[in-house]
Image (cartoon, rainbow, N blue to C red; front, side, top):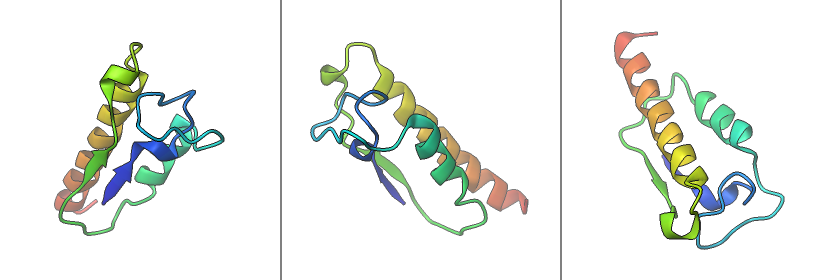
Length: 81
């Protein structure tokens, strides 16, 4: 699974090379990842995060949270939940 952060609206993730006005909210992005529960995948990443473009660190925090959610999916799958 590869999550490209530039699909998120710049209000929630301004630190990307290709901002997408009208994109997903942070809540929607997290909901999409959470909806992948039960899928057996072998790897994941979050791409297009450019911290230098975001002095508030919103993008980095969202990217870290998305990666955490992906790790949680792996853990839940391994636990059989």
